[in-house]
Image (cartoon, rainbow, N blue to C red; front, side, top):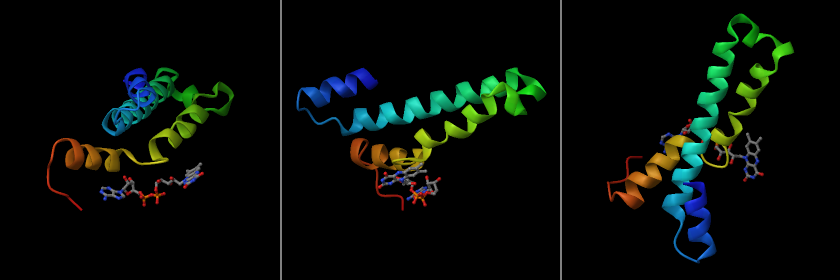
Length: 87
Ligand SMILES: Cc1cc2nc3c(=O)[nH]c(=O)nc-3n(C[C@H](O)[C@H](O)[C@H](O)COP(=O)(O)OP(=O)(O)OC[C@H]3O[C@@H](n4cnc5c(N)ncnc54)[C@H](O)[C@@H]3O)c2cc1C
C-alpha cells in the first residue's frame, strides 16, 4: 500500500486515499508487532532490559502523528466512501 501510494504521488496522481490507507495500515501493523513482542516476552517484555517495552511506547508515534487512526477512518469514510461527516 505504501509503494502504491508513493507511485501515485510520483505520477502526480491524487494519492490522498492510498497515502492515508498506507499510513493507517503501517501504524497498526507496527503496533500489533510491538504488542506481540511484549506478550511473547511475557513478564520480561515489561522489563527495560529487553527493550520491547520501549518499542511499544515509541510505536505509538506513527499512530498518533501526524494524524490519528480515527481521523484517517473519518477521511476515508467521508472523502472515499461518500459517507456523511460524523463529527
Ligand atoms: C512526537 C510528536 C511530534 C510531533 N511533531 C509535530 C510537528 O512537527 N508538526 C506538527 O504540526 N505537529 C506535530 N505533532 C502533533 C501531531 O500532529 C498531533 O499530535 C496529531 O495530529 C494528533 O492531534 P492531537 O494531539 O491534537 O490529538 P487529538 O486530535 O486531540 O486526538 C486525541 C484523540 O481524539 C481522537 N479524535 C480527534 N478528533 C476526532 C474525531 N473527529 N473523531 C474521532 N476521534 C477523534 C483522536 O483519534 C485521538 O484518539 C507531533 C506530535 C508528537 C507526539
